[in-house]
Amino acid sequence: MDSFSQDIYIKNTLSGDKELFKPISEGRVGMYVCGPTVYGEPHLGHARSAITFDVIYRYFSFLGLKVRYVRNITDVGHLEDELADQGEDKIIKKARLEQLEPMEVAQRYTNLYRDTMAKLNVLPPSIEPTASGHITEQIEVIQEILSNGMAYESNGSVYLDVNAYADKYHYGELSGRVLDELMAGSRDLEGQQEKKNPADFALWKRAEASHIMQWSSPWGKGFPGWHIECTAMSKKYLGLPFDIHGGGMDLKFPHHEAEIAQSYAAFGCTPVNYWLHNNMMTLKGQKMAKSKGNFITLGQMFSGEHELLLQAYDPMTVRFLMLQAHYGSVIDFSNEALKSAEIACNKLQKGLELIGGLESKSDKIVDNELSQQILTACENCYVKMNDDFNTAQVLASLFELMSLANKFENKESNVTEEALSQLKRTFKGFFCDVLGIQPQESSENDYLPEVMEIISEIRNDARSKKDFQMADFIRDRLAVIGIKIKDSIDKTTFEFNG
RNA sequence: GGUCCUGUGGCCGAGUGGCUAGGCAGAGGUCUGCAAAACCUCGUACAGCGGUUCGAAUCCGCUCGGGACCUCCA
Figure: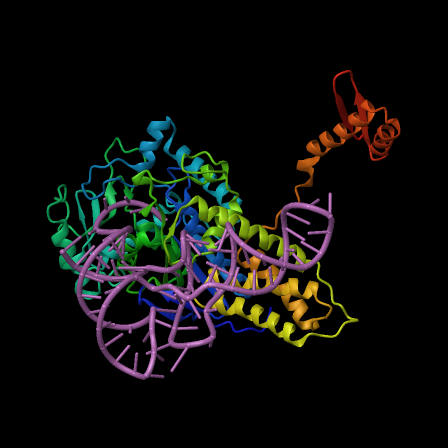
């Protein structure tokens, strides 16, 4: 570990300010991030969130902090139209369309999500709990809220009583919502008979017999409300309060607002000290969302099979593109931006190789200025990362380090031992370990067939010119390394390890 | 309508009031049999108008444009 400052400032979306990050327990971080609802293929938006918090997770670990990172899998489908109380469960709908068991659907997309994230070099979280695996815990939280008088049962469902809650706590503190306006806004919706108040939200929903995913509860057969799983599972694995809660900006309201309310209502305590929200991916200025149908799946990104894609993009290109912007800004999709990210990422890959191979020129004079520039750029990686995880600026520092490394390589002078070792440590550490860019595998073998094609062409050309010395030279040298040439009338083939 | 974010050079995209991020594209150069690669140099941009200030892309106000949330959503 390097001796640079470890004071990290985080933009807390609860206060709207950058705040010094103080973990509850020194040297440890508890982080909870909202994961996917597994009823469809992962798309660019999922990648944005996963990569944002992956980098944060990686950076804390890199600094030597012990992180417990919990990211849930929502495998209870919930209702597509919850307010109107008549929607279809998303997972059940998908199961019907694909003629599968609901849990088969959930499993399939969970697997796909994990595989895809692995391609993006997103580390698996420490714990990846499923909503369906924590029904008991969710019921317990609901019972707490009921016994505290801030929820009520109605026709087999349980709702959080927002008015009762607001008497004691501040509802809307995260999203800036004003309760009166919320109620005014929802007044004309139908299907609200069960609720005392339109702004009340479900903690538990009664299931009709036809609803396949259902569990027993003190209130009869049903399934948990959308927000309660995060409250139950974050408390179970991280305790209360914990350090960081992350997720997409679009979850601020109602999801995260509801989590805060549930936590206070059940345990009289804020769930978390720092709220972090990543911004959206947009397509032609519009948010990418499954519901809008304007999303590009990650599978399509990697294969290029989408009408808007000019080519296939490597997962690392996608990752790099996202790191070039701060997590709090919107990223608009474009082929130009991706292409430019691809080229830039490849350059840094070469920089990694170059820097890895640098050696001290001990017979040359030490260039103190260059040494200092290297140390400053190294420190900047930490400084920028500490400033609300500004990966865009870290990349700028890495480009600067690469440029300085090239200067060193081309100059007839040395740098201090400290500068050289710091350069190597920092560049690799930030590029690979923190930003999580996978070093390019040398894909030399991929070229073998084409290389053999070329060699074959040269040899056949020699044979046709009766330059048998050259032709035999090629055949004999290949034979020595285990490649046997087989000439037939119309073509030449090769046998390896012959 | 309410709440909030945002508008930066050809493009993408950072930016804590003063010390011109960075990348892509483009131009010139070094190197080179040619080409490529690599490296070096070059662009003084901050929607508009007004204000605060010695000084503003950065703070304040207004105008215009874009977006998010207020229903499921990463």
